[in-house]
Image 1: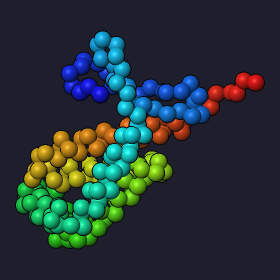
Image 2 (image 1 turned 90 degrees about the vertical axis):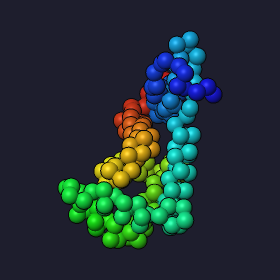
Image 3 (image 1 turned 60 degrees about the horizontal axis):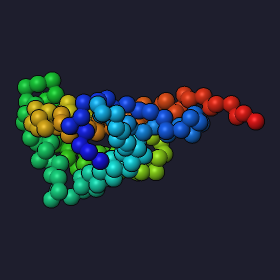
Amino acid sequence: MRAPGIFQGVLQAVPTTPDLAALDYTLQYKDKTGGDEMMSMSIVKKIFGTLYVMAGIAKAFPQLEDVGEVLRRAATANQGTILSAVSDWFAGHPIIVSVIVGVALVSSGICYLTNRLLIPAAIGQILMLGIFITILHRAYWQIFIVDAVFLLVAALVLREQLNSRNAVPSPVSG
């Protein structure tokens, strides 16, 4: 698979089968020479599901990610802003935040991996990532880059699920 950054094209969702009842969207990248690069949404869900599970488990190990320190830095950076009270509460309760975030990440990762409850999982991820960005952006500007990728995937999963839910099965010719 070639690096998509070297092409000038469009990223679009296209059905891989004409049967709307079995609609499976894939990401298709068309470069200017007409070649196609395919990456199935099911593969994307498995990759990001695995990443979510790993991130959720990492919340339990301060050696991997010290949530308390992250929240303390965010509280310091948010002093004097409208986010100050919320940031201070999060910083004062790092274990509660770690458990809630860890469970949410592992749960949504399992949903992505098992292809079940994807709409609530994607909505939950979008909300959680929005909160992460809001609280942490002053202390960690990199969150915009990292979480933008996860937001994009959650939005694509949500779109895929809503489109497949609204798809009308084609009549069976007989």
